[in-house]
Image (cartoon, rainbow, N blue to C red):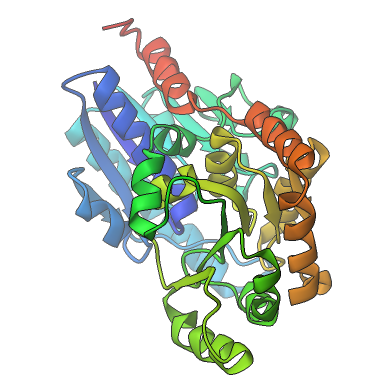
Length: 371
């Protein structure tokens, strides 16, 4: 099986693509891959660290206001389509898969025009502009949230697969997570994450919450700040409390997040689609603080889906404070029945076999059958 992957801009688009590649390589031995990404996107640094060959095109997204820059974007798109067609003719893929971000536009569109079977995967409850455009051309649209199929009225075929990143964390070893944090396997971990780059609102709330943590000394708090917030966070917490609370670890980054997630009892986080897929695959209850600075406010819509199912508590940024966050954690972790109920609801939303479902669709589209 020869597979072209495309997705970029953020880890939320890149990691699902890599998860699909990993599962495809496992289920269809001998598969070969090519990743086509943007010259300036995060994928240009992440993908070359894997064993997947990487090629780049020059592409930018559309501005939401009329501007001369949008004319340049159209020209880059057309040039990107021509270059993508050339790459596809050289690689001769059986299928092309796009996992979001504007770089997918020319790559997947080129595949459709060349008659190559194609799949796009939409991570969010509200689809992005690129996937809405591509949905009219591709063979299959795969969605992460059940019920979001209606967002693609022009699609030929739509399947509910969940997010393939879920498969990666579902198979993680929780004992390695405890070990990496220096905590015994009996620990109840509250993991607080502001995203790979951190989040000021969550950072401020954690600093304000630090003095209250001694009231929950049976819990182990792990706060992942993001590199930029690490030093000021440590200074601010120590200035507020005199010393780092005994039940709090502050880390700039976690390189084994799937294993740490597997050992987590409650997570406080933004509401990016990939993270939600990982949490629900493991059945982790959550307190979600959606980022207000995203297109179409899609993170709040993602978060509300979990809240309505009973798997999460949502706190919007204007309502967020140290006390509000502490109270939410206390209410969930001090009530065993509520925690268990949220965990069950979270697990019901999870699709740990997501990557497998996408590989099955690849088999169907290419007529490869089962190996």
